[in-house]
Amino acid sequence: MNKLKVVFMGTPEFACGILQALIDEKYNILAVVSQPDKRVGRKQELKNTPVKQVALNNNIKVIQPIKIKDEYEEILNLNPDIIITCAYGQMVPEIILNYPKYGCINVHASLLPKYRGGAPIHKVIINGEKETGVTIMKMVKKMDAGEMYLKDVVKIDDDDTTEILHDKLKKCGSDLIKKFIPKFINGEIEGVKQNEEEATFGYNITRDEEFVSFKNRNVDVIYNQIRGLISWPIGYGIIDGRHIKFHEAKKINSKHSFENGKVISFDDGMKIACDGGFICVLKLQLEGKSKMSYKDFENGIGKTLINKYFE
Image (tube, rainbow, N blue to C red; front, side, top):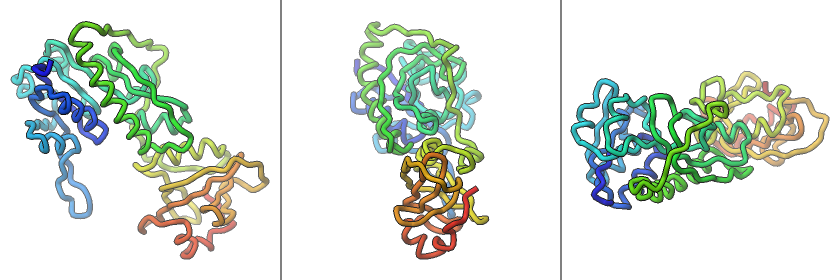
C-alpha cells in the first residue's frame, strides 16, 4: 500500500492535516500542488502557502501553477496512481480528474451535499448549525458534487468559533483519510450519489457579510455571525461613525426593554442590546488601532459610547 503513488493538491492550513496524514502513513508522495505564494504584510514579503511549507519541511517536490487548466503537464508526467485534494483553490481540469488509476479524491469540510463551496466552516457557524463534518468524495467537474465515499460527523459547540471548529475538522479529516485510502484501494468502499435537491452552498465570505448589523436581529443570529468570522476575516460593527472589529464575544439571552444596538455598559464586556439579549464584546479593535481588551477600550474612548448605538 505504501508504494501507492500520490499527488496531493492543497493550499491553506486546513489541508496541511491531510498532507501530514499521508506523510505519516508513508505513502509515496510524488509532489504537492499548491496555489502560488502571496505577498503579505506591510513589507509585502512573499510567503509560502501552508501546504507548501509542510512539503518543503519533508523534502517533497512542490508545483505551483498560476492557472492549472493551462499548466498540468508536469502533474501528468508524474503518473500518479491517485490524486488527493483538499482546499486547493482552483477548479481542476478534467484531463487531470480522469488521469490517475484510482481517480481524484477530494476531502471537503462539510457533510455533503450541504455546504458545497469555499467557506463551509464559516457558514455552518453563521447559520447556527449544531453539527458538521468531513466528507471524502470523488472529484468531478461540478463543484463538490461527486459521489461520496466516507463521512464523519463533528459536533459544533455553542462557543465554537470558526478557528476552533477548523481545528476539530482538520483532525477529523486527517483521521478519515487514513481510514479511507486502504479500504478504497482494496475496493471495499463504493460511492454514493449526492441528492442534488438537498445541496446547499457555503461560498467564500464577502465584504458585506463581515458587517454585523444590530438592527432588528436576534441575539443568537448576531452571536453566530460574530463567532463565525473569528479568527478570519473578523466581523465589524459601526457606531458613532467608527468601525470596530469584534475579536471575541459572548452572548446573554435575556428579556429587556433596551433598544437594539445600544451600548449599555462595560461591566461584562462592551454590552450591546439586541432582540432577546445582549452581545458582550470581550476583545475588539478600533479602526486603525491594535486589538485590545474591552477594559482597555473603556479606559480610552469606550465610556463616550455608552448610550450610543451600533447601526
